[in-house]
Length: 276
Image (cartoon, rainbow, N blue to C red; front, side, top):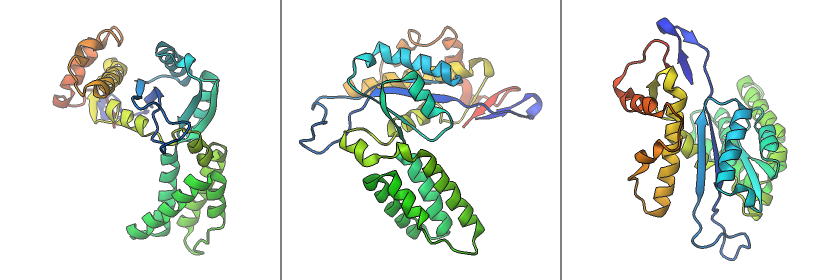
């Protein structure tokens, strides 16, 4: 998140976290022993704000407990490769059987390397990325690491070699979280599409918002998104969501909600922070 200081100067940025506790409903082959009931629907709780990771963990555990998480037979975690996230999951969700590296994030890194190898040739870079993703999905992390280690690199392109080293280092650091064939055989999700959707809805829109209401704005979006998800599952209707916000968010929500409605008409005030 970009942040602007008084007078238009540059200020240190801050990182809004988005967390999600949900019961996954994966699409599995017919006859799979892990297939959910036919009428199963995904249920989710979202959190967003400028939390420190320990505070976010406490809030997520509380949300999970309210929807019966402790009664679940199995927990699994799904994160990107951000520093501290694996430890965060192990501390606050100690029953997780695996902290899976989000497949989509790993695939993005492979795509970056493919484009570095084939600049200006989108078709060829896509084909190479697809080949690597197939290996990673069906053979796992060790297989894709081996494939990149054996990759012939052009001798006079230092930028390509640097990108190769960066991507290979990323994969090696996370290879213990990339046993995708086993995860899929157990019926576990390997991609965080639901979380990415939450990020785009909760904090991804371009907004100008005042510091005093910033955290509450994110919380309101989070609450509204959770309610909209439930409404879509039940009837597709969104009516009543706004009326329920007051019972979910904090005491300053009305101020933040008013600010949220007005942000599209506001210029960035002094001390405001632009969220992207």
